[in-house]
Length: 501
Ligand code: ADP
Image (cartoon, rainbow, N blue to C red):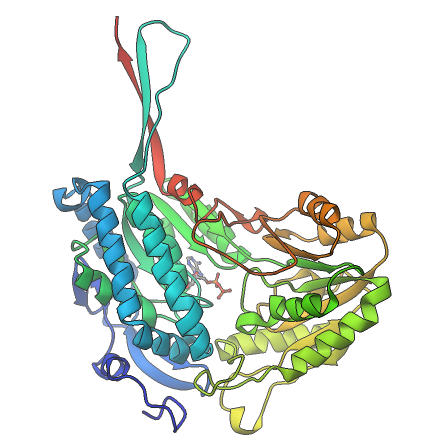
């Protein structure tokens, strides 16, 4: 097909998915057009061309989805299903994701732009791993018995599902973000309405087909493609939805919280933006630290909420790290995700313009562009390609140092002492993640204790696993996904008092 580079043969399943006509909404187990017939086009960011038409859900479709999800929640085929059986279902979903790895990876690369080897070795297998991990939890969701101060009482707790849960996800890891939320939500017995990002709806739609093939009962998972407004906004304001789990920008997170407060006080969990500090001490293993700092920020073309975008380097090794970072950045191959490139384009023209705006503001604020900074042209001119961009600066108040750019841009500066470092590392509104590179193990732990971040990596960066809790401090959000914590996120506790007297 013309949408991949000329020498790339897409798998038959991928071609069939793209050529089988406009994509619909999954409502009550059926694929349906939106109530008002509205559609939008999903764009391939590597060449700016349309991939396929997708239904744009309206608030009437949100009503339909809530009805389907509520019906399924009350229906015995779901609410009487044992945890063990829900676990089997999740395991089957993981098997099918693995079986369809090739086409899911191709769709992810076409829609998001990321290199095929990343889609096929990270996004898709990690999505399957999330379903397997929560398959195990589904049969282990327990309460406790509680000794109270009154005599003759049996007091116990049970963890019950929230009910109907809205899952609103971003475009940087489309399938994986769906898995992060769907797997624990289903393990806990909820029914859901999933809204993928408008930039990258395709793998969520394909996942919907997989869920049906796995035998997920009708209405348990409803998928509404569409824009933030009206689709996402209608989900957050709907009184029939009990909880919203969101990953995206802090700005939208605020809107979601106030919509939830203004409707039925629905539960909210938010995984939001970041501006994570990554710290290199002079005693670090320099080659590992430089390579690690490079990938900490440029991985996924910088479109990661945990990206190590503020790099603090101890003064004696500042020049060495800056030069090494620039040299490593220049070796990164940028290109179409099917071409063997290390990095693909950014996700959209709008995002490209936003990043270029930040780069211009960094320059005009006095930061020095060490490498990168210009949109790539030539054979990449039709896509949204930017090279890794390294800013050296002396001013933490710059926008490029304070605000989340969500693109391949790092702001590097020197530090001289511990107190200065800790104060500067913590001096943003965000607190999602942090990294530290040092051979001094007690200093590493001291930094982990001092930094206000939900995840800290020592002598590495960016590892995430279904078993390890993940989430933000400060305005990076609240609620912890993954691990046992996500079970708490998707259940509520009921306390039962029995009079034994
Ligand atoms: P990003 O900045 O990464 O694009 P956003 O926070 O804008 O992230 O979007 C993340 C998700 O939130 C997407 O699915 C988007 O459609 C949705 N969204 C955007 N605006 C709203 C809104 N006002 N209410 C609910 N969801 C929204």
